Length: 241
Image (cartoon, rainbow, N blue to C red):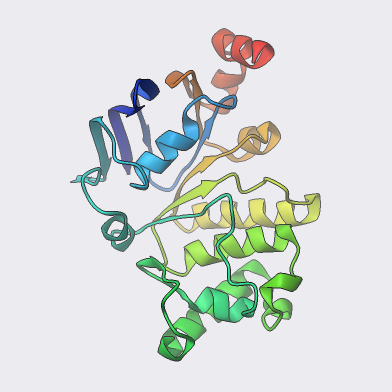
């Protein structure tokens, strides 16, 4: 479904991602991990076209997407979350969700322009996430974990086939984390392809079909959770990092 081929990304003289390649199979969960500064967030941002790549190719199925603008990639069925949840605190949960279109979040979209279909989709997402009881609350009254759950909801508003999640477990209490993980697994069962960047190793090893490990801008391991956990180079990086 997603193929990253020999991707390199530089920032001036710094090589943040170095000749990296891996693929994510359709209807699977792949986790991208590594110590701080490994390059995983940069590579993640290259896939979603936040950053242009300097070398290599990125494909969605048979379509090359690394030259496309981010909004075009979204229309092909790729949705992504952000570590910092993008919400309007004065608006309700329903209103925030309804403002997310298939082309991504549009801060200039007036509430009057939200369609009946947008509101119906928001209601479906809230039911899926089991948060209909907070639909009318302003976002400023929600916990950080609840906002993270809504971040997943905002991605789902566009009904993507490929979901990119940036640290979904960060700052989330155990109860909400269990909900997020359970919903991610349901999405996989529905045929969604999921790529996530995450530091929570228990989460990663528990739900991933594939784990890709980065260190110093390069991929050092790529395989099943069991293979990665037994990889000597991975153990050395985490023990010394």
